[in-house]
Length: 364
Image (cartoon, rainbow, N blue to C red; front, side, top):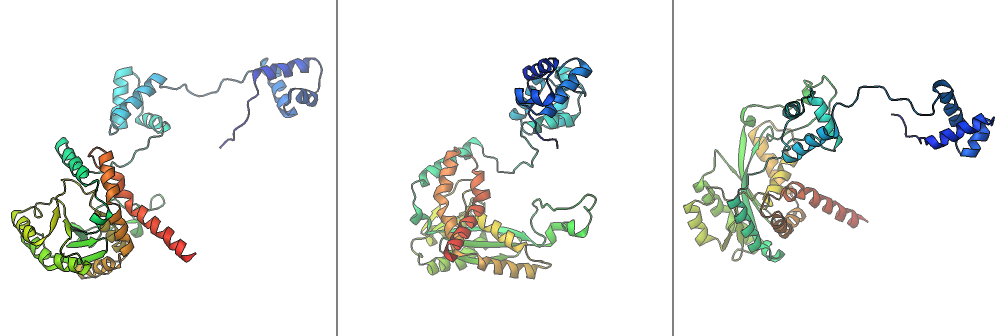
């Protein structure tokens, strides 16, 4: 890549020519106008060859798109980020009667700092859902850490032998896409999956329960009967604990609600589509990340690895997750009830960075 260089103004160039006509040498002229003698030589040589000190016009085809065309492109992209370059090219050709290649449009968009990325998938939040979420946040915004420390968070998740369906990237050279080490092995239904139920609180991890087939309201009640009170008793909050669960149909079924009414001191009534508020989502993410480090080829092995990694999750991690609840609440209020993307996607990074800093301080 060519380096940056200082352009000599035309006024200095003309002054150099005047000094040259007066019979002065290159080095003398350079000292007078404060430029190098090689620059003086180049300017005089250009003047002798072309009769002017102006730079020659650069070669190459003129820009096909005018500033107005560029402004049109960016207006469309800002209005609809999902508009493809091919479709935008068609609109440009119809509007301005110019023939373009879609790659030209892509270059223009990139020049403004935009890059094509995979769109993040989030639950659709309509106006009713947004209001319910906002009402819930406002009712919880004044709750302090002591309130959340007595909450037991519960949820279910499915783990496949061959991992999740998320996008996995690999570093590879061209034409090596079929190299076995660059492939992500897949089989139907993930090679067999396991549904698990788990719970945790600020004080640590609860039990991990494996279920065969799909979980219904009756299985869910049995799991709560066998695990919820025991976990609360272990934490010493059996008479004051609060249950935090999402609005899955089996969680809100009549039989479940009746059982909770007589068996649970309090149930936090959560709004729909609020995965960004439940810190157990971060626990599932962390568990999957740790599980992926193992080579798993059977359901039995998957169960063993999940149990092992579940029990290894540190108390300090769960404590930080629960302490993040006031921040999550305020984040959704700031987003006026819409999805609080940053809290769910990046909180585990914040927690582990914080833990690493504390570990370093302890070592010092």
